[in-house]
Length: 398
Image (cartoon, rainbow, N blue to C red; front, side):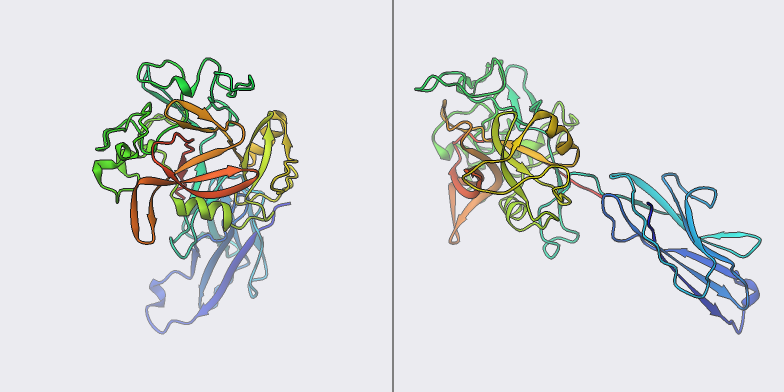
């Protein structure tokens, strides 16, 4: 059922002069407000000169410019009272046009065309509105960032649960990873497999650090400091998002890395209808974290937050429905020190773009990352040489 909110007021005005040169009916379409993924509030105003009669007031809307009463519209013949209706059941991420109108029994009078777009599914707010107006909203990539040295190719993982891990068995004979033929312990400039654990700021662009290549394995943290200056967060070419991502639009600077403050707001302060911002889960038998978008109300799939006791089991079939409604999965893909891989399927560290400041003192050898383990999130200070996962975001521009 379509429900619309329309606010139209009628004002009778007597002009003492120049009234013959003014139109008898003036219709204005107001700015659209309260926009969500499927709803919006529309309003308009009609000013009537002298004793001109208006028999119908309303709004019309369409996905094409200059909608009129031959298409979707709503009206009232009560021209003395405020007319209200709520427009719902719109398509997410869709551009619409609206015009207010008035009918005098003979002719339709239209206001200006006002364009608006509903929010896309899968938006995540990463800042308070008091800090940025409007609040920053982002869309996540569908998978972790991966790199192939032999072809100098960046891509997002094919599936959200994919991670490279290590093909060498651990002391118990187990191997971890979901990308056949690839392993982070084989990292190097000529390696033709995929890697997905990166030292901080290893975008492949020379930003003044000794170690700026994605395959860098130095364990000297000073080698990762941009231009030798400890004050620099990831900036310009130092951010992995400065690269064209082959399956992410293939354009430079289309993506970026979240800051420390954005990670914290996303996970710990952002409101959602369900009260959940993330949960621990097994997806396709891979352990990870499911991030839930701003409008998640738990009706798509019932999820619970219970640290240390994973009970959210999600199949690939269930995930298709959840992903369509904006959920994002971060696998616990371990960490790398030099060429040694550890903690796959238990620990997930995701870099932020933020350099570490402790009590006003810069720590040039460390940066912040968001750590996930046992269903909990922790803000960690981590040496820059440690190889961690990267999940990029794209800023939403309404």
